[in-house]
Image (tube, rainbow over all chains, first blue to last red; front, side, top):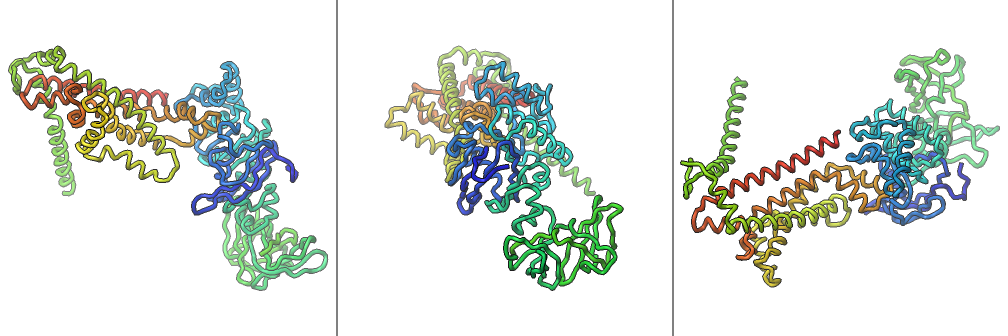
Length: 360
Length: 268
């Protein structure tokens, strides 16, 4: 992983894009290590695609710098950056065959014909399309077309591969299959990939690190697990997965533990960060799967099941607790997990370390 | 009952459609049939059949010279308008700049401004340049009126293309011009071809500019026909009209054929 201060394969410095009336990208700093798979994740309008377009060279930044392996490419035309780009709608050339599409970047580089043929065959092999070179793009399925786009973006050995929602147009099963393929290719080629998506599941399954963007800025950058388990703010907590976010204050207790006291009086056990004083006011983030039903005894948080939905691998409960607060609980549907019915009075168990404190 | 009304309405619609078709096509049919008449005056239906008026057209310099000039003017205007109109369309479709909408309206304006006004304007513009009465005046004038037509057709062709393909080409190592040549232009080739065909036709049967701008030394076929009709009705006119109709059908047929061939080729 990237050490702070060193140059990555791609480095963005205070990268900014203003449009009349709004700021699309607001001074982003980012360093992507060589061979890393980094995802820009965010809702639409968060600036992730604009960032990608600036790196590719299609959109001139208002200010800031883009460095590729230590050299600034900010003012360079897209064709001189040596960056592969894969688009959501594939952007294949409809009048060229698959092989001609893949050969295009090599032709533009005036490589000898024999070398082109060899590289095209190898690239088609890599994406498992060997033998389809003479087809036209429209004779292929969506998944195959995306493989052609991928082969075309890789065949000239780019220093960086950018992917803009490349699986957005595919159906769910095909998408899962392509995610797997992409991971395989990333592992085989060791290429640096910057991937843009609004689909958090895709970001979670594929990335080494995720930069979660919102309103033109990076809210949090880190490994998938960091973002999920230790969100730095409410936006991150609520964007990634499901969260119970409760407002309140913290009351310290001995042994690094404490109580979180919600506005309505609900008391929840929390583990306090040794580093500093607890935030005031505070937010408590509890992932629904960290909550469980307490075993028979009188401990735990009392509540009433308001609603439950069976979703196959787990059941999702909506439970009313003290102070008019509602908590979401996800319980796996296996023989070890306790169940409850609608209207039942239940007690909820929560490990102090499983709740995450934030500044309110 | 509602079925009856529906079928009655449908019958009426058919009748209306058929009448419209007859009124559109009947004059052309009459002219074509008349052109094979052997008599030295116009008569319908013809008493005897002959190709003498066709022969007259091809054998007299009075007719064939203007026809050749028309051909030359139409080819020059087609080339000029296709290049200018296509580039204008690409700029309007892909460019991002202030006042784009206004520029588009301005560039289309020669299609909307009454042709007589255009002719008069060009007359006063060309007069001090000593261009009046020369073929150059017609090359320029016809290019002016054909360019917006090309632009509109190519613009509609551009709407069905994917701008990301050009971006992809750039990222793959093509500079702006190579991306244009290898990716964008092939994608809109059918639109450019039919735009060129229409540009040719617009110029070839244009008469108002030809009258204003072309003098005795630059008489196009439509102008010669118009002059001829003022003094006598020469049956050669019917032969020429038939040939012109045939030319239009041929050119539009070729454009359509080229388009469907390309479509089939790209479908494989």
